Length: 282
View 1 (tube, rainbow, N blue to C red):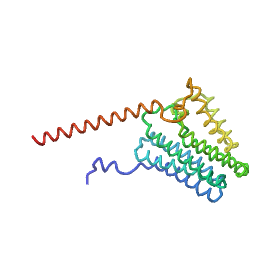
View 2: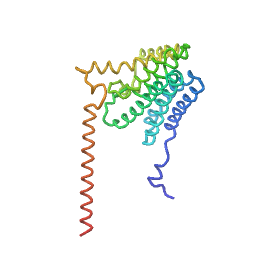
View 3: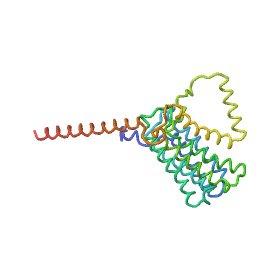
View 4: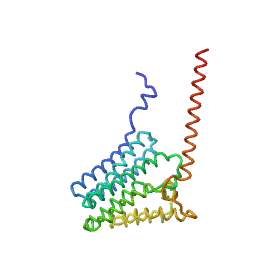
């Protein structure tokens, strides 16, 4: 049987989707570990999922194995690893005794993560690559799971900080659906040459992280979460509601252009149908 273009394109690329599956497994393991009161392992598993999430897209681009399936699969894995997993780990650790307020706080985080991913996927072609609109879901997951990791590492009684944990979880969820601008670091040239001093700084950074990984990583992502509001406030003359939440001017303009193109496409299709009917009748 000859290989047609349709048969050649069947199947999925193994390597990037294997990394995505590894990230999904890490997120699922975090949920199971938290159910067995292994909260430190659960928190670490979420950070491991972040590593796989950072690798799968880059590997796909480097090996020219990007695909629509991979993009959709990555989003589905992200909502489990960075949406459901951190929320359930936090709930099992500190929020379960708060009753309705506890599980609602966890749900706000999950809903914020799902909305963040949906907005990111729909704005992929129109957004500024240098910035994220809203806190990225892996960073939000790092804050929530980082608090669990720090609390478990230093034997903090979760009941003593349950309301603080709930507020942090809610804030992380709301920051994901905000309009605050966060540096994406996608404009960094990772293939370019750097000086010896830069390599030395990177080595020292790894040493600092290795000394107290839970506290250092939580502090880094917590400060990154604060950088969004600070960057947004400094970049505008007057802070308005649209800078915090809601549709931005760029999104409204993109939506109008999309609607216009859709109307034009429908009119063009109707014109083609009319021409075909005329030719058939003749």
